[in-house]
Amino acid sequence: MRRATKLLSTIPTETATPATRAAVILPWEKPDRDQDVRAAEARLDEAVGLTSSIELVVVLKAVLLLRARRPATLLGTGQVESLREAVAEKEIKVVVIDAKLSPGQQRNLEKALGCKVIDRTGLILDIFGARAATREGSLQVELAHLEYQRSRLVRLWTHLERQRGGFGFLGGPGETQIEADRRIIGDRIVRLKRELEQVRRTRGLHRSARRRVPFPIVALVGYTNAGKSTLFNALTGASVYAQDQLFATLDPTMRAISLPSGRQVILSDTVGFISDLPTELIAAFRATLEEVAEADIILHVRDIAHPDTDAQKADVLSVLSGMERDGMLDPEWRSRVIEVLNKADLLGGPEQVEHHGTAVPISAITGDGLPELMSAIDAHMVHAMELLRYSIPVEAGDALAWLYQHGEVVTREDHETHMDVLVRLREADRARFDGQFGKLVEKTVS
Image 1 (cartoon, rainbow, N blue to C red):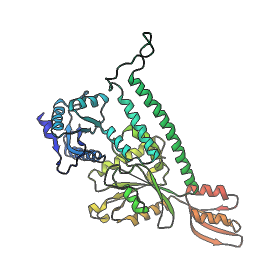
Image 2: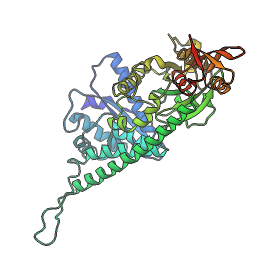
Image 3: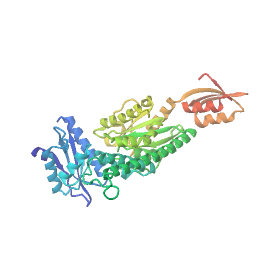
Image 4: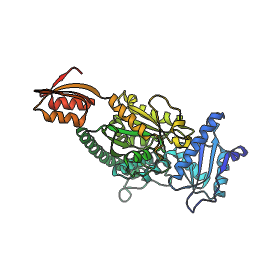
């Protein structure tokens, strides 16, 4: 027990405001090596940030080393007793266990500690519930909550006894309260999935409309709190909610911006990724991630000043690779990624950041490096475009105007009966141009 007690570290409470007091506990199974200690501290700090983001006052945090996972409580007996004493002493009302708990483990810990216990999945679901602003986001969060709660009904509601159905002495046993609750939740899940499908169809119509405009899509992805929304505001002049907290925004936001070449693109801000994202949310936020699947360019925004930045990068790439396995992303998505090394101001400026390949160091707060980022997007757009030659009859002025509007006209030679035009077009635009004007114009060697 003495060892478990030493692992507990108290956070000063002088600045705590009258609010719900919480403890954050990280069960850690890794060997005691320097890199594992650093990883544990980074993971604990992330859990504290998640907890603080829903206005819980964290007065206690701890990394508890696990020799073995206890089926009943996950933690060891001595660790539970030490934690119980700390909870009572500091009047803690909520204990966050930064791991996935079974319903039985959650119930047993609540009995042993005498307070509410939530696991990592429940914490992230609460955060998502507080952040979702649009109808789609709210539906997705409610669906994830219900799917999570449905798994908690088994052997958790032991106080609910079987109710007798029918009339008089002939009535057989009716359905249990657990079964009734499970049926109600199941019915609600079916309705939510139906409503979400309608929302996704609507989003699909919006995407189809954008393709008809059309403008290329540039999607921001990255670990939560990497600065995506701050960068979105800096590039678009918008006022999307951006704070130094985890999951400050959830719902996708889109704005049109102009690149240095004059070419217009649509910038999309998406939900932040996080390690060990609950499986319920991976499925529920599929529609949000569809914006990434539609993107012509993916800006992977990284907090380059974070001590765990490499692990965060691996988590983001793991999610994108999972989308590829599920058929949401095409196998060529990596060629469309530009790495954006944000928060360079914390390291002395973009010029102090080591980078390779197409990575662009920036500071979304100060604006340093943003012109270089815009130029990089422009160059990537040009690289992805086809260079084509068309011979356009002089009477087909609408075809020439279409090329000026949707492509980049490199050269133009006017003749008496036709115009020779060298133009850069995206593959989708080339197909649309050929379909609309193919019978009027002649494509020559590109």
